[in-house]
Length: 285
Figure 1 (cartoon, rainbow, N blue to C red):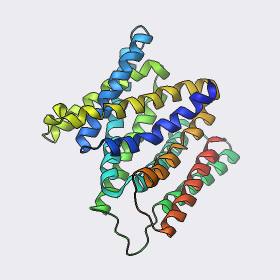
Figure 2 (figure 1 turned 120 degrees about the horizontal axis):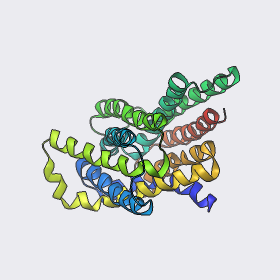
Figure 3 (figure 1 turned 180 degrees about the vertical axis):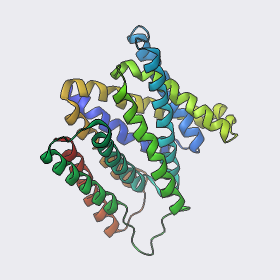
């Protein structure tokens, strides 16, 4: 059972970008469907836990974390459409790993020893190198529309993921108990986004509801990760979870037929190896 829980997060998070692109729809359809699917799954968790058993303060914090997750996910979905999954996922994953590691050091006092700091910053350097390798584009290769804008949006919205990952560290509650309030925050965040962009009609569009499948896939990964942490430990669960970037990137080339030149493919594979290696180094402290 522990092996299954160890592998499910990587599989779920790796398949999610592919499912989003295969199901289709615009960013608003995709983000609403993902949030709604997560809400459906969290209702099941709520029943299994026989209600919400966290403080009001923690409920609000968890909901806020969920809303910030939506910010990060919107950036990813925009990038899938404009530059493809194979360019988006390594960059997004690398940025999240770098940001999360730095937050751990600066805010929570991680890597307290000299050796830990040395290994940690070597890991961060590897992540930076990995991101650059996977982002390599051969001259003359068409990258897609609005490339610079897309990269800027992806980098800025990554802050949403970092806040999402940081807030639970300051909470008394954790694990399955915060999954439902997070999903509430996700749904509220999506509705605010749709209202702000004046596209609430997306709520009733067919593609939005088809993308509920995406939310269920995300939920399977998120819930299994919680169990994996309990059974396998934080470091092991975290590192194996990062294999999702390999699944999504290579999967996009095989199943979505995203195009890369031979040199770009070599750089991408090398970059993925370095990113996973960097994730391992930053978590062995």
